[in-house]
Image 1 (spheres, rainbow, N blue to C red):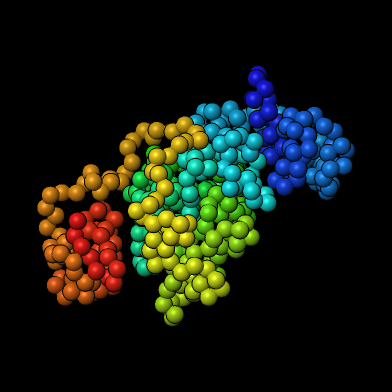
Image 2 (image 1 turned 90 degrees about the vertical axis):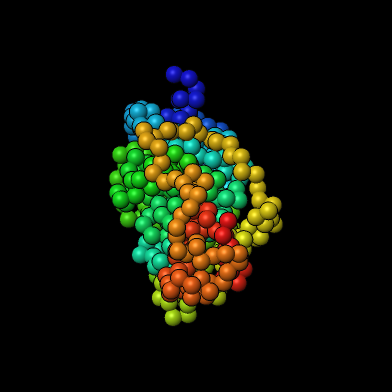
Length: 381
């Protein structure tokens, strides 16, 4: 066994067996210099540096590395990479928060989040078409301009954010509230496959771990911690995504929100965030501008990777726009756009109500057939 392997075993003992709270664990690591040194130090000596309750002391007395060895072996079998907080590739932004996970379990290829910006796109599970369209569209344009979109792969807004990012050029990252080997919700299996092909899934929970209600709340600190800012694309007054926004503020991150109608319950949380100081977002450009660049001056799209890529057995289920665009579509909406045309005129020409038409236009834009201009004007590409 080499020193690196032994150090990882001891760090996983701290995290999984002794279950030392992250803030205390980091203090011990800083003081003793390594996880192995912490492992070798008697509990009474550790207690001189950190206060431990009776239950924590009992766990500290379990000085077996066997559970950690089993986790490492299972990760090898499942092609899961373990990224330690002491690793140079560990995301620096995440390490800055009060309680960063001692280790991240990673599937796929984690982009170098120390080199590229990341924005979280979150929102309610029972999303409206308005919320889904905005989340997917904004995530697509962020990804097209070198921004890594991070979300929780939950149903609704999270999934829409990942789908939009997958059509861009920058990897997307899903943060699990479950064990790294579990797909939740199960119906997102195809989406997860696509994410792993073009990005990564991360979790602080090892393969086979049981999830609990609080684990989904705890993962929100990782979502916001990885990012420069958090976009709440749609949220009612009581929504888990508002917890992520609150954590982002505590971590010194920016908070963005997409506005909704004053009488729309699904947007009440977003509207309150904006009233409280969150930046109003109408398009990805509003977020890009916050960091001093526009789409024309976006960060480089070349992405370094912190972990190896896990290639799935099958190619991703989605197809990029440039691979699927036919020469002639015969789409009545596209046929109605000659030059630069306003939304109302397209509605008049096609007979499609404006509310329904906006969804169709957004999908066509995501597929690369047209682009939206200011003032609800559209131009065919």
